[in-house]
Image (cartoon, rainbow, N blue to C red; front, side):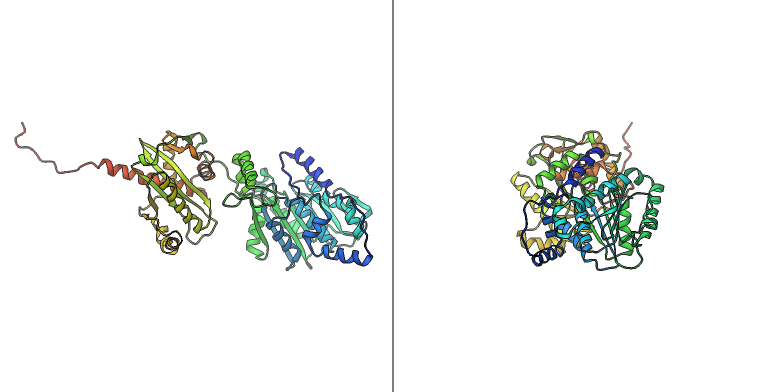
Length: 514
């Protein structure tokens, strides 16, 4: 599929116009076949969505379908329920719109629906998103040759057109009511697509967000047929904590357990491209770096405002001493919940203390399985050995008790030795308070990252967690700072033990004192 990078509205419009031309496929060669052969060939294409797209839209399908494309379209084509919903929290540049347009065209030629509505943040966007369908029906010579002309003589406008077999297609901007909308056969809407329906300003205003959601549930959903099969598609990257795509997702969780809910990020938890047929891992890393702080929203469906407790300029790098010079090196793990597979961030950090400074020498911060988290320890163990370093391995006691026997013991069979984990038994104060209390170290320039970590994705994620940290805001992106706090606490305790405490004894009066 052709991928569209949206830089601004004007640039996006130009790119989409160019993209739309790809649906007007000319015939490159004359196909000689009997009517029976033609019928058999087209019947096979109408039974296979991917082959249908590769054949009729060769200019669009330059990259093979990703796994999520296949899962997404299969769910809607099979349509096992009366109400068939697919919600995709889809990052930028994943061909969500082009795949959906091809799906609608495929389902149209299969006679699956009678009245289609394209909804977007405003009417111009909705009309633009609808245009590729109109272009395909008008000028795709492969479709025209196989299925005949479908353009009607009367109602054939950019934002509202009806085919010769009386299937209607209409564009709606948010707030434009489809109430009572029908085609000439009095068919109410039975297929709704919400594409780029969210708007940042609306999402930031709870009253406007409530009003828009009321419009969706009342005007849009209420315009559907009560009887028969219906399709609803929601497409958007998650641009705010409260937004249309999240509300539709939550509604499905509560009320429609058979809906398809799918999150599509640019890369997986290991930094690998999730659309390897189109993008290399290196291309993804370059774009994430280019987009910078906004990559979480644009590419990872993880919108968050910057916090104010840790400032970007506080995070600094320099060449740090050899590991053998440290009196204490603490490897501290914040392991998350033991039954979690991939939903929580897990963090392992290696921190040393020297001359009153805290040195972050290595870190692992990612959404990974427990097995991958344990593998970090063995990777760090080998790294330390190669650099002539030794660390004390710590983990919060409550997690250690649960993980030690269930998972770390199993790892001994694979790696042939055990990581000597110790449990941090202290009664910890509130997590946010503990992390906030470390801000002074950063502000006074007492925390340094090894210069080798400048381009390290784990270190970058750790820093991003600090920059987004807000006391009292609940999320699962605090585990890196929490692990660093644990290491700093233990380093401070070790330093106190090394210096020695203050001796306290009983004072006696000297009777010989004058």
